[in-house]
Length: 95
Image (cartoon, rainbow, N blue to C red; front, side, top):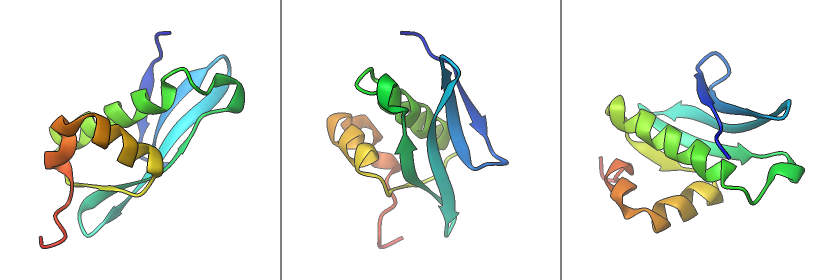
């Protein structure tokens, strides 16, 4: 399934519309880092890779903007564990 994801900075989230329903990854800025705090995919659209697509989009956005990331959502933690190429984006607590 091909989905289109957009960044909605007014609502502090990344969004995908799937058959008229919104899937989102919400974020907030904490000490200059992007905290990815909540992923939501409507129940009937789960287990199709949509949450991971949102997370990848957000991580690529952070990389392009030279932002550090705080994984505040279990889905984000799992995605980064499975894709260690994004570990360099994680905020080092000593920074």
